[in-house]
Length: 276
Image (cartoon, rainbow, N blue to C red):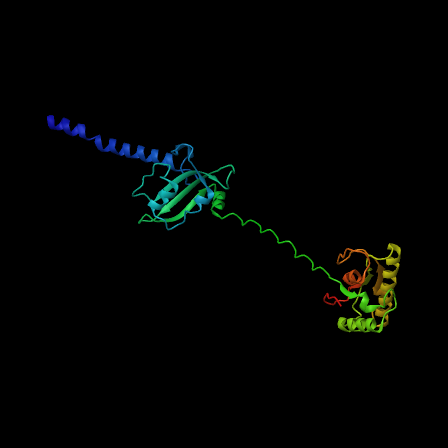
C-alpha cells in the first residue's frame, strides 16, 4: 500500500516539469520576439539604453570577438548572457554628430560558434546609415590668383625729345621702331595707352600741355609704325605720379635728378615692362 501511494505521488512530476519548461519558453519568447525579430525595448537594461556617438559606433565591424564588442558597446542590454549565446541585442541612443539630438536604434549582432561577430541588423533599418562616415566637409575654393599687374613700358622723355620740345628726335623714333618690332603682331593690339609726364618745374598748365603734346607725338609715331589707329589713345598728366622726389631749387643737378619723372609710359603693347 505504501508503494502504491509513492508511485501515485511521483506520476505528476514529469507533467509539472514540462509545464515549467513551456512557461519559461513562453516567457523567453515574449521577452525576445517581435514581428521584426528584435526584443521589446521596454525590457532593456539600462531601461533607456545607452548613449553613444556615431564616431565611436563606427568602430564596430564584423570580425570582432565578444570581448572586443563588449569593450566598445558594453554588455548586451537584454540579459542574453555573455557566453554560449550567438546573439546580442543593444538599445542605443546614437548622436549622429556632436550636439545633435540622439537617434534611438536597436542593434542585433550575430556571432558564430567561435564568438566572432558575423552580421548585424538594425531597427529601424534606417539606423544602418549611421554606420556610414559623414560626408567630407567641402574644401573651400582657393581665391583666384590675382591678375598680374600690367606694368607700362617707360620711355625717357629726354631720350625721345629735345629739351622743352614735343618733336620726336631721331633717337626717339628709333626707340619707338624697336618697341613696335618687339611687339610682334600689331593686328591683335586692342588698347594701347600713351601717357606723358613732366617734372615739377614750370607751371601746372604748362606741364600738362607739354606732356600731352609729347604723348600725342608718340601716339602718331606708333600709328605710322603700324599700330591700329583706333587702338591708341594719348593723355598728358603733367607732374603727377612722380617716380622720384628731388628737393631743392632749379639747378642742373636737380634737373638731372628729376629725369625719371620726365617720361612717356606705354601700356597694352604686350611687351615686358622696361625703362628705356
